[in-house]
Image (cartoon, rainbow, N blue to C red; front, side, top):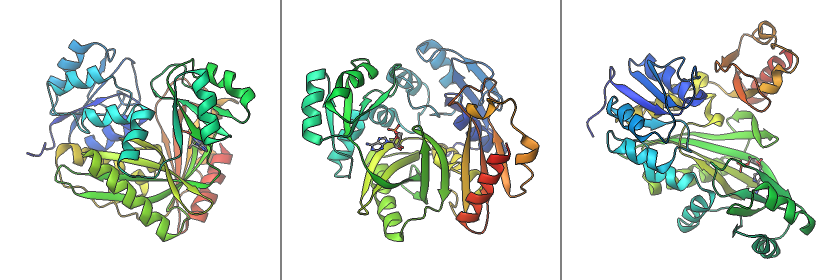
Length: 375
Ligand code: AMP
């Protein structure tokens, strides 16, 4: 593959914080960045050279957008298949459309992982209330019902503890094709962010430990506090995923670590991931620069981590009492503040994050927490 060199324009489908941090990395290396989404004054658009405002279904706009750049990548994985196909007619799309197709649908993703012989949470396909009852009798309760299609607007996940919950769960997923997953009583959650080049080179950032609140990532710690054997096993699985899918770009695998030390894959994201945000400050090459290098056909950079790190997400809820106290939060000198330029701080909306760097991950967590509390 002939490398796409600095000075070229890169197209990003989607315009959120992942695209913003990608654009910062790309502009630092002298690339131009174009972004397309239905929104205006977006986190990516504020940093890009060009912000195109069009619905993903406007295939003429997509073709025009892709024709003006050397390669198209994405920061939002629910881009419709027709949109990707329209872009692919005008420019290379990396990672390729078939990877998006697999990972934007829970059933396709789980079926792929199962056929690759990788460990996943027991699940059943559910397409009716009757099937839900049967599936629950097979995999047992508690269980979680999730819509198969991530892009589905009713979204929703519903935890089921007794058969009384079946009807409410089926309402939560709006009667749409779904997946019933066994509830995993995990010891902890980890993720591995990795990148693969067109030549098949592979790098990873080790295991990252993740804590969620209300289903949204709250804290990530790197490195994860797990035995080396777990990190090695998680990295091996991640490498298999990237190689089997023939990924050119960045992909994150999220895992549950069970109480008896087994790994189960929860889900895949074929792009930089929230749990890898620490790499922006703590690593020789961030996950965003790796995405840039991979999609441009450049050699991957060193993923070496310069310092243990802790990241805490800042959600819109943080604005409930008015503007957070940025001066107090930045008074801790080893804590870095990232804000995404979003104007409306709605509850649950990712507005920014804090990353603390310290000699140990425990110290980094303590400093990030202190900064978070000072907000
Ligand atoms: P998801 O959007 O499917 O990644 O779910 C978000 C979070 O909900 C996960 O990171 C877990 O904390 C929790 N969760 C999802 N599925 C399960 C499961 N099968 N068992 C236990 N916890 C789960």
